[in-house]
Length: 341
Ligand code: NAD
Ligand code: UD1
Image 1 (spheres, protein in one colour):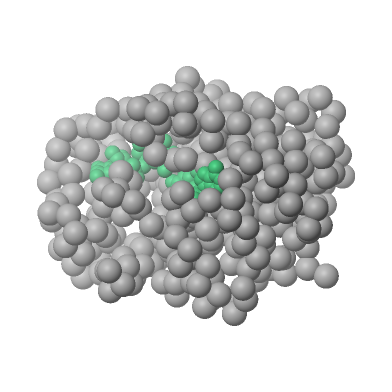
Image 2: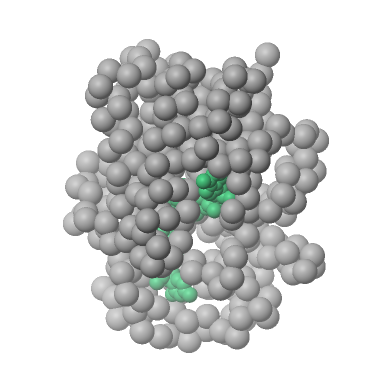
């Protein structure tokens, strides 16, 4: 029997790629999504890749009755909790929506897990909890900095809620994965990131500019203390990230302590500047990107990239894809989206 893993937010960008990897590794992903930031066509993409109709419940993590339905209809081995709102700017304007969805939503999921004796939880956290770290590469021991947005705060609070639950002696084994910057798409171009409206993130903005949907890309600042003056990030291919989740589920299953919480960085360990990312895109696609240097964006950190020793050791996992692979797959996905619209 294949083990069931509940994937909240499984129709979203990262959750859909993780569902593919879970299936490939012999798990049975069960998706719960309210489609507030995804489309039902994702399910067709998943079927085209895997040949399987994944079980999908349309509903909200804030609704305990849908969780009761899922846990009573299926034996759930573990939960990977992606469902959350993720737009930093929007979270500043609508903080209560973010605290309700991301914080109350997590509490509802934890309550259902406890009620049904489900012990394994992977939580989507973010490198945003580090702010601008004092030392690079950033290790899991680096102190958390005050969050610079309600969104970032929901990730810090989420980690604390899980840690407190574990400290209380609850039968819960959980790892918060602190993702760096996920980019790329499945190589089939059947699934990828669906940014609604004008994208905030760099790579969707690059691909939309190259596709003619945006006039030009503005590089936010060139006077940072980095080799070419632009910010440094650790860009990780979403399929590498997906693989890390499967390894984390396996790790939790094999972990003997019944109450346990840990945090793990999930990045490549390499930092690239914005200009390097642009040039990598230009190289793999043969396109000349229309970009200009503009002012800094408020709230941006100068440089951050992961120390990956802990993920490699505990999860027996390493990234396989290069920045160029990610750019190629992001571009193929953009072209697929442009053909569809
Ligand atoms: P996404 O928006 O593509 O996916 C989230 C999914 O959750 C969407 O399908 C959405 O419809 C669903 N959802 C949201 N609220 C829900 C609710 N109340 N009930 C049911 N479903 C709900 O986002 P993503 O990029 O796949 O991110 C997944 C997780 O990873 C999020 O928790 C996000 O904060 C975290 N994260 C993302 C990034 C990134 O750059 N993409 C970086 C760090 C952390
Ligand atoms: C952003 C969020 C962060 C979140 C992360 C992953 C902010 C302040 N931070 O981080 O909380 O965890 O996304 O979802 O929004 N850039 C440009 N031009 C653009 C867009 C981006 O030059 O049009 C630059 C940025 O200045 C940055 C880099 O590209 O240096 C990456 O930006 P982005 O993709 O938005 O990710 P983060 O800023 O790392």
